[in-house]
Image (cartoon, rainbow, N blue to C red):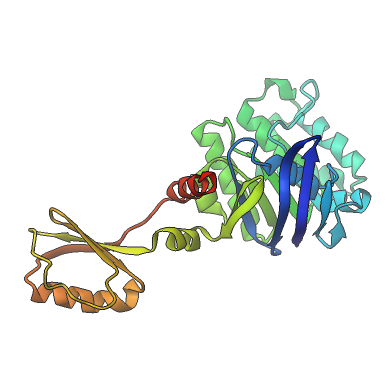
Length: 300
């Protein structure tokens, strides 16, 4: 659905995005992570046909991004600052954009998304009276009004209170269940881990792409945490598949390649050594740890 090849953008002497190549499949929720100034918004603007690349090419929904007239009806975009008309009502904001797209059945579409996002009762109120969360939901409705094939979301929950952010996340998950292609830029790593099938990390250039689970395992390996009733000596724990062993009091941390296959043998050996095992679990790394490690590697 999205194919980018060596996409580059300069602003004078400043390199904003360097030779970015990636593919996003139809129906995928792709998370795009990176620090401020890393090139996330610039990439979205290029892929949505709002900003011409300095070099490289990209195809979105089967259309070259240079063909903005054909591309724009196929994409929806939510920018970090949605730019709604605050003196107009929610209804008239959406009607204005529906007219720009020449939408048939515009009123039915407006009602559909205002109801889905819980704004129907406030449809004739000026947008200037809305909370930030309500404005964000209205901006999402605007991005979806013409039923785009690809949806670009730039920091959709930025600055929202927890309840509004959850409402927006739940709605994105609902869109994902409908197999829409979603390109999500976010600083919220919990959000990315919950919603995205894959993530890409950018800092001018694309550093790494993969599923959250895949990136965790590539960076940190897989570790089993075993809680013991009391400490034991590990001098006789000699198994060929054990990569590393750390004992901290009654907590045992063991690195394995394949815990599903190797755990039974490991547990049997520990019991033979007199270990009284209380709990066994796989250590779960956070996406935040992955992000910080990759950014640190890039700086080094």
